Length: 343
Ligand code: AMP
Ligand code: MG
Image (cartoon, rainbow, N blue to C red):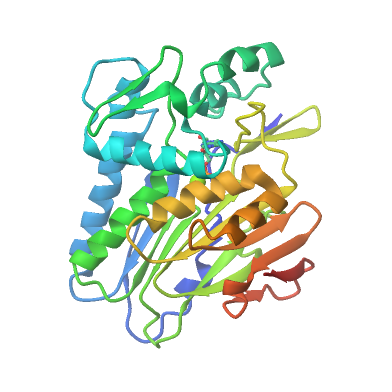
């Protein structure tokens, strides 16, 4: 059996790092939320901002992780009568909104199903259909009961905020940068990037989208995006998977079947301008639109329900870029993908 135990940064920041111009940033890398994270900040207070950023991400990890035995989410999943507080309830409410908006493609109650596949423990297995059906009886956002500061789950239901927590963390870091008067910098939380301000030379940051065919080579890109004051979040089937009997099983699950989504997509990148809450939105939507597949994802984009742009990489080697990014991307040199702009 072959497996990848850790999620990999879906967006490569190598190009951003090499393009910093004259003034130098302070940069900090940490491991949190089961992901390698890097923060880079320019300015006199950069050291303080970086240390505050690290503290904030660790605080959220301790609150939201379902593998931390003391987190609010762990207590909630255990059925303990605790007041999880307004912040956790606010994030669950956001998850409810994105679940409803995407016809249930986004569903944080898949936690027990994800566990059955071994994605939480890294001891992978293919569950039987009977096992999945039994677990799916407890999946569905209607099993969560929410007030402003309390949440309760129906018996058998558990939640996993893994598809939205890093996006929320990037929102929090944006707020920190704003409060601290940071003029420029960037944040990479696994596949979640916040490009803050511009490069010192005034150009936008260059953010590379990882080539799903070569997930181990951070310099192997599908294309670059040129972004300023924006979030970019990628979900991909290459980020966490195992192989058994020649078949690949990845970590993004279809709530209808409890199995890895077979949507014809290999990665989905959602891009939105910086605004409070948009990091959370990009994270939720990248996961949901991966499940929905090309046609439904593009219909959802066209519906205008939310203001965002997309880069979809398909199993058959196409890259679909929505028109709002048409003049903000460049295919990687020598790329064999076929690029199409979508309107
Ligand atoms: P992301 O990398 O943001 O796409 O999140 C993927 C993670 O979210 C998985 O590792 C699971 O923990 C969880 N997850 C899987 N499928 C879904 C889904 N359909 N909706 C919400 N969360 C999911
Ligand atoms: Mg996500």
